[in-house]
Amino acid sequence: MLFDLDGTLVDSEPVWAQATGELAARYGRPWSAADDEAIIGLAIPDVASLLIGRGVPLDSPTIEHWLNDRVAELEVDGPPWRDGARDLLAALVAAQVPTALVTMTYRSLARSVAAAAPTGSLTVVVGGDDVVRGKPDPEAYLQAAARLGVDPAECVAAEDSVPGLTAALASGALTYAIQPATVLSAQQAAHPRLRRVGGLAELGDALGVGPGRDPALSR
Image 1 (cartoon, rainbow, N blue to C red):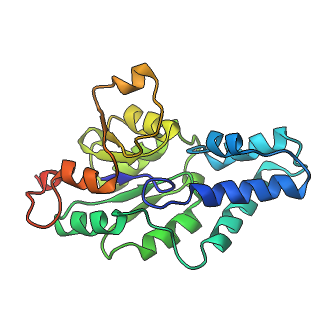
Image 2 (tube, rainbow, N blue to C red; image 1 turned 120 degrees about the vertical axis):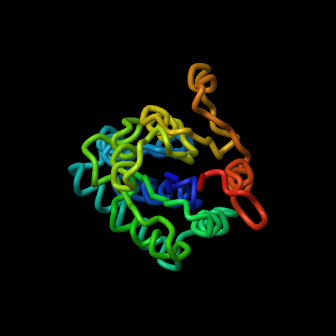
């Protein structure tokens, strides 16, 4: 089972939006709610490129590390888990289903989230600085499947954003879109490997994990 992080397991998209807006404001550059929406699911270098294009006078690595560090500061009290995230991860551990974190957040912050997850879950972490090509390229998902020792086509992925869903589907994984508000293209919506659910609890039901259930993924 391959999980995206921001917007999927944790409600951290608003935190990333706050950090990005703060950096734009520091240099008197415009930033809006529409920009907050536009960066959902983007790789951090892509967010940095957007800020540079707005006139932020810093190079990409400096912006990338500043954003990552600022988000870590804002989440100092722990990751803002989405409803049902910890329960689903614990159920997958009980069902002996290996899980990985596949995120464009850099590995230092991603590993801190994995460390706060239920014991035995998220044993593999692929961060944005572990890949050459970020989402929507499938590299991160392919790397995670390889590190779990499984064929990507045998994996299930959970994502919330269009770039993430594009990456997961391109890897060959059966992909669940867990955010009903995400607007997909007609081609993506019709993809034979795409499923839509209303959240993580519904994902758990679809996967057949949890108390008294027959864990479909462990077969």
